[in-house]
Amino acid sequence: MVDPVKLAHSIESQVCKNDLKKYYRFRKTHFYGGCATADCLGCNLRCVYCWAQKKVWQPNKFGKFFTPKSVSEKLLKMNLSLIRISGGEPTIGKAHLLKLLSYIPENVLFILETNGILLDEDYIKELNDFKNLYARVSLKGVDEKTFEQITGADGKFFHFQLRALELLKKYNIQHGAAILFNIFTKEQIRSLGIPHLEYEPLIKYPFIMNKLEKHGISVIRE
Image (cartoon, rainbow, N blue to C red; front, side, top):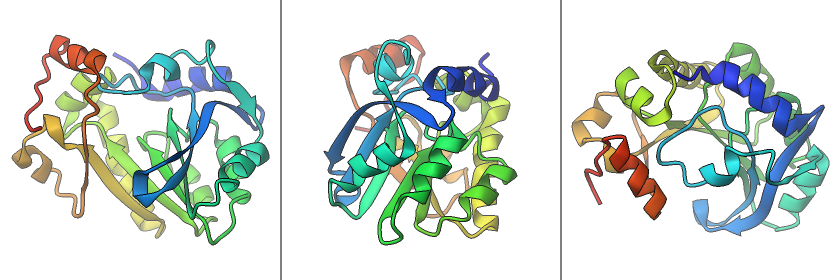
């Protein structure tokens, strides 16, 4: 069973050097109505349905190191009011993320798409310095069992995701939660008791569908 906190430390040594971090592309995307996106490498989960796993889980084979300033310049050059980091887990490499946030003007919203596992109270306190931040926690299950099945990580870390949401609320950081709706029933999702939960669609690449089948995970809704 994977320990995502320990894995994050191991991955950080591969994707970060001081405040530099590895990325494999920069692009405009249609998400959130138009968003400048930087795709980073390295993640501390091994989600069955991850669309980016072929690159993100092999950071030694792909990408280049960029300074926080160069990442911000590439994103801001796209001249969009929303920016985000996608692909891997952006909270790996705290020094890089905090420095990057410091270069983002207040009139540009930074959407932090994260699994939330590394967001302990100390990390949240540092993020609280940035008022143009929206944290979007992607839940990887509805309970410990489904979390384990999807991520390969110990089910106790499911509660780290819920803790992140509680801390974001405590420190009045703009935030929300999202979940992949295709593989859970409506009753399971309601059992979370999270209001305004955002639904994410499954990206049905053939290799993802094959992996879901091998792990005994059914697609409930199209």
